[in-house]
Image 1 (cartoon, rainbow, N blue to C red):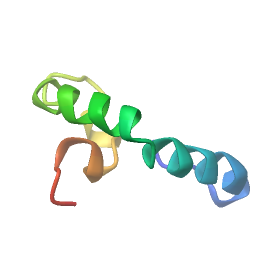
Image 2: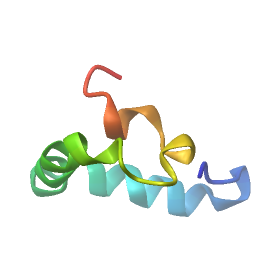
Image 3: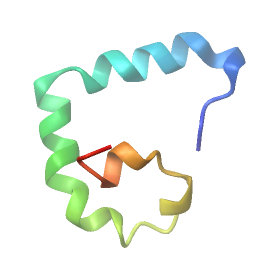
Image 4: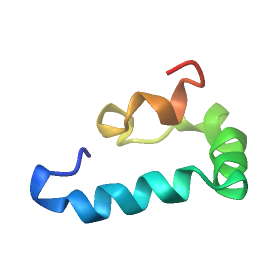
Length: 52
């Protein structure tokens, strides 16, 4: 689910987490299974599409 503009600090924190190689590796490893995630429609495209 996209974060509202009022949550700018939380959004920035998520971006900093995603910049860590370890977190990026976990997201990369999980990509094949995101298609089964019931809330996929609310996920940002970058989580299931490495080209995004």
